[in-house]
Length: 296
Image 1 (cartoon, rainbow, N blue to C red):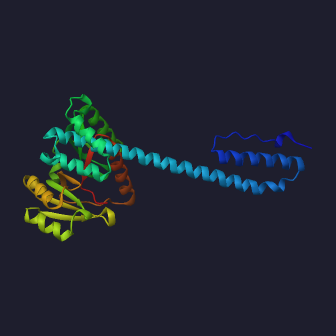
Image 2: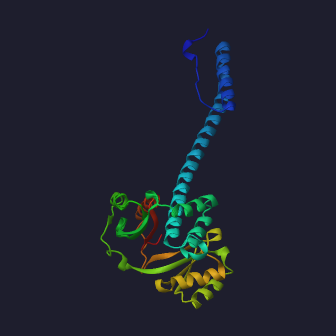
Image 3: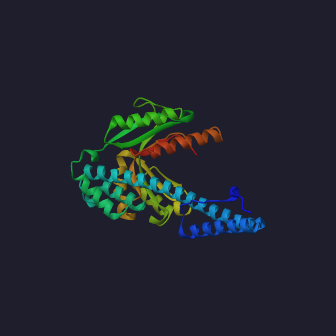
């Protein structure tokens, strides 16, 4: 005798294979009801759990991919801005514009499509208000009193200042007046090469120091290994162009703020708060670079 309480209806939006499995599972329930033989169901129940677990895993993967795509889209937006500003700062031809050449090298290193690079250069020759960016520097204190310098490209200073002030405040920090932080830093030239762009650390060291570089730093491992050439601001153009002749363009070539002393977060919790703060800054479309006196 059938009990209406045991009748089951399943409504799911799924792939064709899952729909077939769902229908089979529903059919098995009806057979079990007719034969009063519910011992058959555990096997099918396990199959159902496995199918739905796979669906959940797929959803998680899809969510992660969506987050990665959004992050990459923001990076591409920032690279496009730098290309536009660089192209407007001099010749639209990379051959005669070192900053544009460096911006294109950075974009290529991040796999920005060629057509988007060309479109950004073309956009720089127009007069669209949305593409009228200016370079702005913000200074302040992050979580735990960390000294922070933010370099931004903005087409609306009021909007950018408001957004950054909100990020600083939310993380227990504060944006300060101009000059409140930069005395803790040296203003230097920064030229970055990936390890596969040069013969060796020693080769880059010899070439850069012979041109007047003051330091060469090595960071990362494997494919992420990079060399940072540090020089005085007045020597930046000469060294950048000299290294271009020897090794081609670096993946980064810009003026930077180098902390005179670095400080490690006082605890794991302080480190986590600082990382969260830096991620929020990086997530802002106008922020190009963040310098700080922290050591993670």
